Length: 166
Image (cartoon, one colour):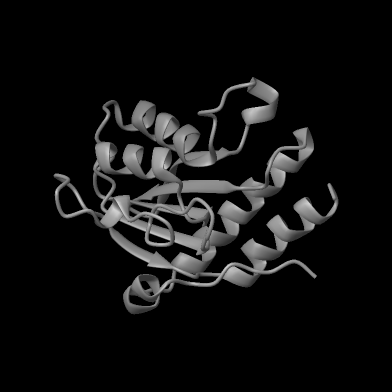
C-alpha cells in the first residue's frame, strides 16, 4: 500500500476549517478526477469568493504539454478573468494537494488571502512540507493556510493514480 502524506507541524497548528470548507474541497476532488480523463496527476483546485466559485482547474500538463498547467494556476487564471484583474482578493483557494513552489508563488502574487489544501506533499510541498513559500515573512503577502482537510480522500486519489502506473 502506498504511503499517504502526513501533515507538517505548521499545518497541524494552523488547521482551522469552517463549515463550508468541506463542501468546496469535495468540489476540488471532483475537479481532480477530471485530470484522470487525460491521464494527468489528479489534483484539483477551486477558488471561491463570497460563497461563489470563481475559478476551477485540474492538472492539464499532459494534455497541454505545459509544465505550468497545474490545477492552481488554471484556477487562478480563470478567477482573474472572472474578477477582471490579477488580484484575487477576498477569496479562498481549495486544492487537493499542498501547492508546489510555482503555485505557491502565484498564490502570493494573486494576493489570495486563504488556502485550504487536502494532502501534504513531502516531496514538493511549498506550504510547509519542503519549503514554506506561503509563510515566508520576507514576501509582501502571506495567506492563512489550513492543511489536512479530507487528506485521506485526496491522498488516496493520488496513491491509486501512481499505483496504477507502477
